[in-house]
Amino acid sequence: MAADSLVQKGIGPLGLTPSEVILEARYLINVKSS
Image (cartoon, rainbow, N blue to C red):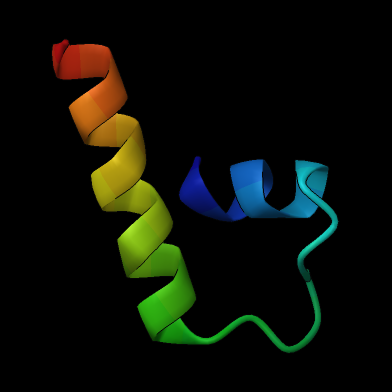
């Protein structure tokens, strides 16, 4: 889900780093929790 979100923003899919995916996942969790 986080990687898909980054791809929609024009980041990746090639070259995605684990830290980018983790940060996006945390962002998505925070948005859904609000």
